[in-house]
View 1 (spheres, rainbow, N blue to C red):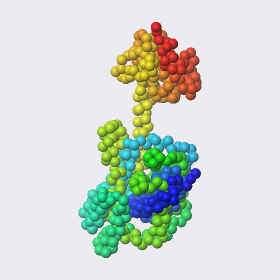
View 2 (view 1 turned 180 degrees about the vertical axis):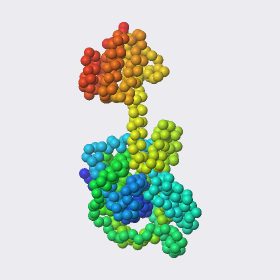
View 3 (view 1 turned 120 degrees about the vertical axis):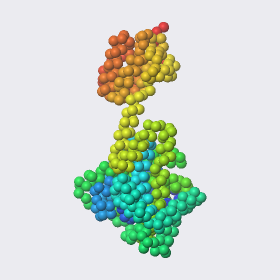
View 4 (view 1 turned 45 degrees about the vertical axis):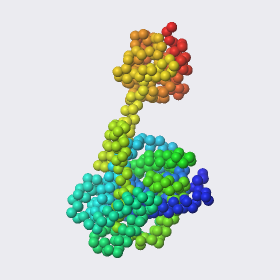
Length: 542
């Protein structure tokens, strides 16, 4: 296993400069995400040090950036809010434990090669789930930008109600800082994307806040931050509390797997280097364990930072290590520089960062391309927003299974022509008795045969057989599996054919399926042909 693949003497300077850019992007965002999660700023900063180094040295992807993100922060806040008061020591300890549990699950998924589980979170589900979390976060950030105090640990309805009822208490100076920050971020990125505008916004707004004594005017600031490097620790909690954290940790793992592995693979294909999903899962696992053991919180994949590094020409993990070194120096020597950062500026930075996560363009695309997928995304959006992330992830999986069963229950069913090409599709209004050759029908059922489509298979056999048919050949190449319900349907169809005097034969039978058909007593007395042409040549009436 090569450490930091792709790094050479020729690109070391460019990669180091990219690390400085990543540091400028990551510090303000991680401070904001820590606040979203109900944690001190140091939790977000510590997640950039040891966890980032461990991940960078272990991962196969040369570009995927690992860090706490908006979705992870919202999941942490919603899952821990009902167990402890945000900001308390017990809350902080549970956040550490949650990261360690997530790390263990990542490692187990790597060892047992369970990365395929992430495939159950399709794109519409991810769009809806992340979009719901983003809107929930946005309400909290709008409150910060307006200077309105709300219960950031409450649910969406409570926070929205607090924001609306708190509008008479809007702080004009907070609004001015927010408007100025948003304007700089949006206009600056349009004309000079390479400039770390978020960092400049923090610096400028802090200077203005200090010089104009805006704290006395009611503008909230970050406040004192404990200085010092991360230290090794271990969360001490009752076993029951550890168990209570398992569902939320699993949700964090699934979301990161679904997004992170996809992004890692896409950049690997784009830049022409190999990736290993199982190695990446182990990297996430060790990184999260390191986060929980050094005062950070759960890390996931950061798509926006990965894109920024790719656009800046970075092709290695060195920027993450440079960021870790820079953050370490900041928490040791520079925390005094952070305590006067105005909260409205942090809210503006986070709000601008998460607006794209609302998925407005993606929902519009789903509406035009596939209405059913749009409905799935919308249900996940509302579930994550109104019921919470844990309920949202459960809804997402249930919808995935329903969608999978719906598709499997309506497989392609075709009459095969004598040249092995599909001829007439046997849909509900299809022609009864379409023939492959005189007296012969070759029928292909393009799906595993199981409980969800067993009745569809039986009906297809009935529709395929007309008066002049003497033999039905089942092309079984696409039938990869059969369960007990499918076997019962197969048996009923075979008995029905026998009653009508129609012979049954198989073609292109897979060896593994042949064993299962033999197990269900569906192979004996049936002729098996290697190809459809062989079946037609032997069985067609002359």
